[in-house]
Length: 125
Image 1 (cartoon, rainbow, N blue to C red):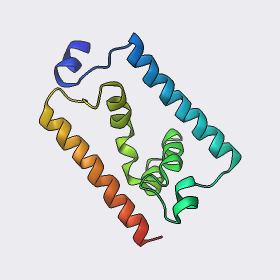
Image 2: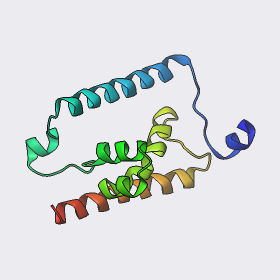
Image 3: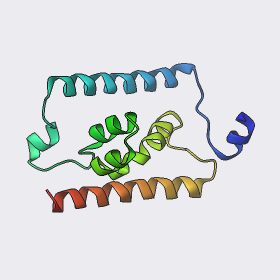
Image 4: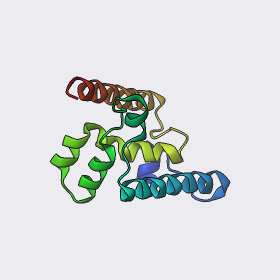
């Protein structure tokens, strides 16, 4: 199974300093996000600038996804499907696929998707 995946995907190198630093940053982010939500604090971007950020609703979408509420997750933030790719890219220097064109296509689609989601959110805000 690993050989079949490694032909198509870039597999993260588990271990080493870079891996543990990235894992620590990710765990710290999740911890801060959990405390922020637990305290009921508003979105800092919206509080500072008066408009929602491109990731507005992603936390609620992730929690809906964890409850297996896929329609609810997509309703909160359509780009919730990109979270596994973003996490994978965090641990593989942004290279999800071995094919460079597929990587460019993936990151372009994710960027465009976040832009479209944000504009849609701003228009309907």
